[in-house]
Image (cartoon, rainbow, N blue to C red):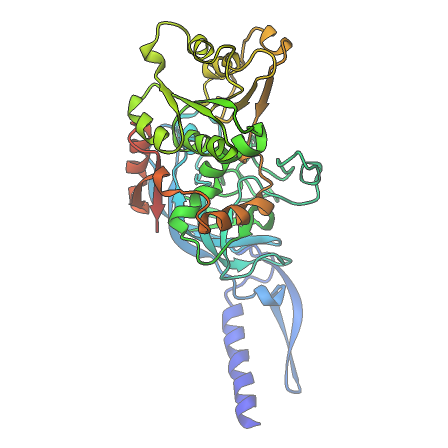
Length: 429
């Protein structure tokens, strides 16, 4: 009995010491709303001011390294940042590996407008470090993939079998904040913006519960992080969005990691002819390794590329995919598919504030023009299955990863991307 009372007393002293660091009202640095409660030890009752809810008492701000982009067209700066605890329905994740995607570079160059300073990154794998109040689908220790396309399961897009762009997505929103209008990152006393609800160029990040999903604990993070964006986006564009049919002909414009994943999807669907198109002929060997039957460099032809493709196929390909993000190639890809029943899919991120001009007869004759985000996958439903398929060796990811670098070499990774010397660079912590 005396030992038990001593234990209670020590716990009380520790609690009082710990709580002394909290102000008596709102503690904005820890994002906790304080409430008056009474702690009972034995027959004594002690009124104290504690953060509510009590189970979240010991969640603290984490100090860690992150790559902060302070302004456009500047290198990333490795900084010490503070990552606040997760609020209600949020989770804090320790990032284990993260890929470098062209979409991140679009923010660096200013073609994708976002507020600065910002922590970029959206293709990653990690482990849940802590959870906020009300989180039921995840717990500390779960291996997860953050989802830049969340899945709430309640909105019109989530409930419709044809949709995957959950209304809670942050794509196209330039606020760079969590749902409550605040940020979980600070650096040198300044708030740092989030990127499409993920921000993975950091040792720790905070995301909404709907923007992370549990995966196989045995899955290697430095491989399956690609399922968080690049691979799934391309693979799904062929299988989910275009629904490529067996025996069909396909053309893929752009042979980066996403474009090569489109080729893998076309091959998995049984396409009989897959034509890879890129101005960098050094990429052709990898394209053929992953399933391309033909490779074309537009620079080697005097005619426009769509006429070259029509000449090769008779009336155009059944399916075309633009995986670059240039409006000129978007129109060329549309013109290269069959005039009556061809399907062209825009996969590359379009440049901000630019309009497409094209001949409406390209569509009037019967072509279909579609867009695809995250390959059309419903993220929470599909990502664990894709990871499981990888573990069963139904597809490979190694050929897409050309460089694995320590996180501190993030700028080197982006230099490789811009020079066309990498397919996917993965940063590890």
